[in-house]
Image (cartoon, rainbow, N blue to C red; front, top):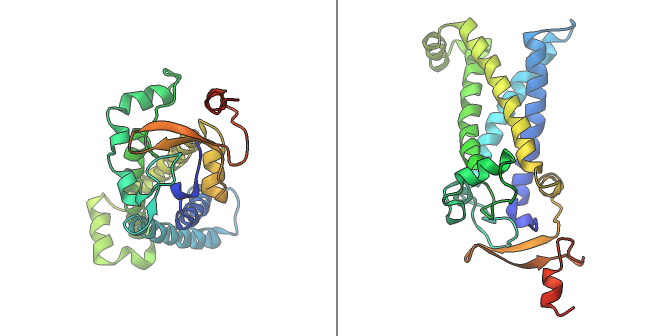
Length: 239
């Protein structure tokens, strides 16, 4: 498919970068706080961990709010746009495709499903991410001395079984996010690096053109280049 900027408007590229940077710092400092391999920087590690935790939570809230105001393409290969929040919800393009996507990811199916911008498994996982971020942030605030005494966090600390159990839960959530990042990279790059070029560098790449109305491939946008995926469209031009 062609990858157009409409799929990921610039504000979403920025929030994606912020997410990545914050996650890297949180995972690295989290490992150090849990198991300090060397001394002398614990206070710095804790400070960075708290700072980037707050950044991640705020960035998550901003991204969710922007989804209700910014339009994006509902599928790859098109410049047509809808409110971004609609691309996170069930679409006609995704109907009856859960097993098709799962079998494709597990190499049980050779053909890539022609569908919306996000496949069914991606939508399910991505909708859970804001909830997991807020929950992990909450457990972090339950442990942070500055906020642990506040009623909303003190109640959570007691409900979850005390500081040690919350600390274990918070550490476990780091592994959940680490696993998500690995799966996310795999799902994003399974078809090549074009999606990464778009989300990281806002670079468009040529490919097939998709019509969301008919849910069919309708052409090829070479962006000045010849197709490299067969002779179909050359034949249609009489070449």
